[in-house]
Image (cartoon, rainbow, N blue to C red; front, side, top):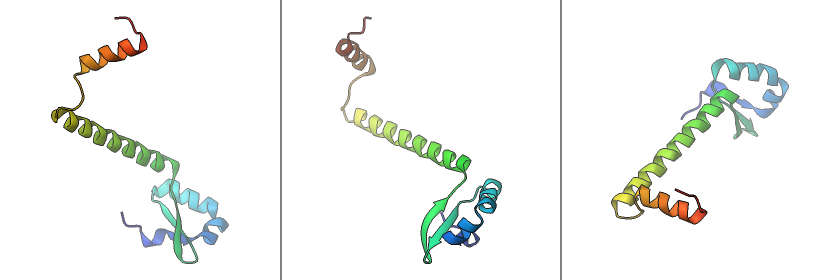
Length: 96
């Protein structure tokens, strides 16, 4: 993802006008890159957009794990679900 150059600001500018920047974040949903000595130091994002990003990441991680599990099962690794449940019940003393 490329950042819009108008959304790159020095940290000192952000500190002086934090409320204005927060309002801008809420309105545009676009992250702001903060710089220190001319180098990117932090990215500020509104909470809603951040939560959406985390949710997407968790979904992608789940999909990757499921794909890995399917590949392992197709290669003869793992066990059928009913066998796994039976072993789980036995291990934890869960009655049928």
